[in-house]
Amino acid sequence: MAVQLGNRSTTEAERDFPGDDNDPDHLVSTIPEDTPHIPYQPLKRSDDEILERSREFYDLMAKRRTVRAYSTEAIPQEVLENIIKTAGTAPSGAHTEPWTFVLVQDAETKAAIRDIIEEEEYLNYSKKMSRQWVTDLTPFHTNHIKEYLSDAPALVLVFRQTYSWTKNGKKSMHYYSDMSVSIAVGILLAAVQEAYIQQWTSSG
Ligand SMILES: Cc1cc2nc3c(=O)[nH]c(=O)nc-3n(C[C@H](O)[C@H](O)[C@H](O)COP(=O)(O)O)c2cc1C
Image (cartoon, rainbow, N blue to C red):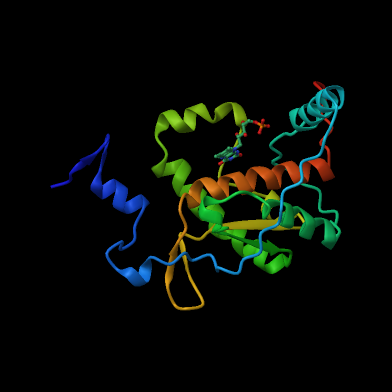
């Protein structure tokens, strides 16, 4: 029987915070002792400058739009790498950086990914999603067909690592990996927006 810890049961706590605290070997930080400390040096800015920057960044991000049709025009390789590196600056639970970004540019692989996703989305729209959910999506005119997955010159696949192995063969848990990866993807979107500011007007 599960024991309540606050309003959570031990089974929930074990699922979210696994680990054997009775095993002394386990009680070693998975972050190496010799990890260098880099001092943080905050910039001094005037209130006016901070206000201006906050407005500009809001204006930039308010122009972001979910795009479902893409140009086939090539993207410079360094731009793609910089966008992914920016996502990798995200904070993560216990600094575990629980993400893998896979950049796919090869037409055959993009087509194979599109096939897998369209097959899965067909099942989602026809069987798995509730009728209410499908109805809620009607204003978006979306369906299981995803041309953009083969049209876009590059796809960034984001994988979440729930754990990893240290050099000493210890299992390192990635706490809050779902939240950490979601934050990284948010930063990735901001990086794309910064590089390719989407212009948007009410006339399209
Ligand atoms: C977690 C999440 C899941 C989403 N799933 C889909 C999806 O399956 N298909 C799609 O076309 N858009 C999807 N979207 C995009 C939303 O429809 C979109 O963000 C929303 O309509 C607001 O529009 P905006 O992003 O242009 O501001 C998703 C967005 C989020 C954050």
